[in-house]
Amino acid sequence: MRQRTTTPVAALVAALAAVLPVLAGCDAERAEAGPVGTTRTVMTDLFTDGGLDPELEVEGEVTAACERSRLSPDNPRARRCFTTETTLVMDPCFVPEAPAPEARLDRVTTIAACLRDPASDRVTKAYVVDDERPFTGRDAVDQWWFMELADGTRCVKVIGVPEIREDLHLSYRCDDGFLYGIPDEAKQVWTIHHRLSGSETPELAEIRAAWS
Image 1 (cartoon, one colour):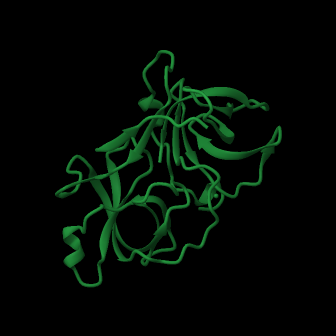
Image 2 (tube, one colour):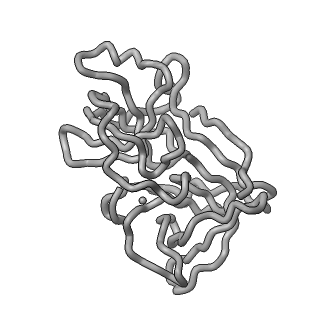
């Protein structure tokens, strides 16, 4: 899939059970070994000029109304979508910059592709009947919805989980443990506090890549 990579800069969905079932199979998707020289940042883009990236596999189709994403607030194409068939909330989803061919269908204004993990080639396709739903959340404290640590651990943002460790709020759920606080972006290699499964104390970890 196409994703726009940018350079690093210097410088809340519900509880865990309400988050999309992410990170399935991520142990097999571990990052390459080796030190991190610079944290890579990626703006998720799931579309080509002809529509949805043909390398993606559509594993389900729904109808939805969407608002701007709570997990990826700085990506202008990211959405939080509410399906009309179920009570499922999907975040993040992504819409194309140009009108999609499906927009010609009755009531459909655009389409959105919703995914669990940026390394996955499977998406849920949403036929969007309202892309201007009023934003119902609170602004997130950081723009990244997904991170990969230097050791290959993969983590997705969670919002509204009331757990504090060493004065840091729980902010990401990982395939091994959790992240706390927000990324420290002051240096070329960003860092964040990572608590491994079975451990009680978060330790500082380097970030290999971050997705918005």
